[in-house]
Structures are given as structure tokens and as C-alpha cells.
Amino acid sequence: MNTGSDEPDEAAVTPDPARTEAETDRARDRRGLGSRAPAFVRSRRVLHLSWQAGVFVVGLAVVVAGIVMLAFPGPGWVVIFGGMAIWATEFVWAQLALRWTKRKVTAMAQRALDPRVRRRNIALTVTGLVITAVLAGVYVREFGLTVPWDIAHR
Image (tube, rainbow, N blue to C red; front, side, top):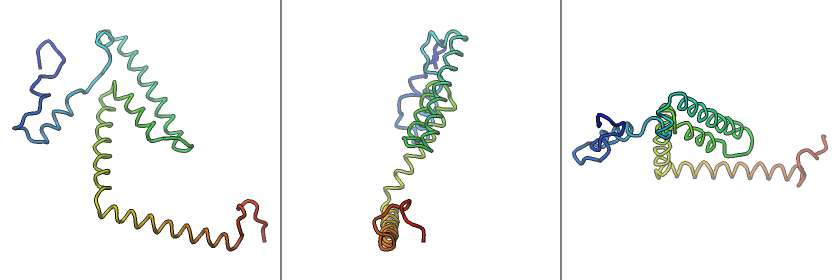
């Protein structure tokens, strides 16, 4: 670090071939944490606290909208992660949570591409479709093409 600057030292940012992958990941995780507010906002405490309060309120509104969308139609999880991204512009805890989530989602995506997992998922999907088709066939045989709320009780 430079003594008069908050900017990271160039050696901490530039990948070094002698570093292990884990050391490079740790250096990347340390880089960029903290407020992304403009410098004039960060230099004035009251303005910075107001800025953080505004970011928190906007992020909270987006997260709450995403939670509502989990119960109603809409892209709930995408909106929740969008709210987390808004919080991550100001708060270290949100930046770390977002990085952890990205790592987990990437790992799960890689796992889903594993041929054994794909075969299992295809087998489960086909089984579910067969069960649904059988149940639909039983319903049509029993009641015809009538919606369930128009069926006369026996």
C-alpha cells in the first residue's frame, strides 16, 4: 500500500506466476472491498452515512420485492440477488456474501454438467413426465375433458 493512498499496491493486484491459485484468490478477495461511493461523499462523514442509508433502503426495497416475488409470479431470486448487489456497492458483508454465493452457484453449475448428474436428472425428469402422463390419462378416462371445478360430485 502506498502510505498516502487507499489504493491497493500494484503487487497485490497483478497476478504473480510464483503465487499459488489459492494465494491469488485470497488477494483477489481482499481487493475491492468497501464503499464504492464517490470520493467527495466518502470524505464527509454525514454525507457518507446518508449515502449508506440510502443504499441500504434501496437495496432493502429490492430484496423485499424479490421475497414477495417468491410467493407471486416474478423472478424472485434474481431480484433478491440484485438487491444484494446494490448492498454490495457499499457494505463489505454484502460483498462477501455475494462472492460466496457466486462461488457456490459456479460450483453447482459445474456439478450439474457432470455426465452422471445429467443422466440422473434426465432419468428423474422422464420419470416425472411419465407419472404426470399416467395421472392425466386416468383423469381424462374418469371425467373426460372437464376442468376439476366443473365436475359434478357423485
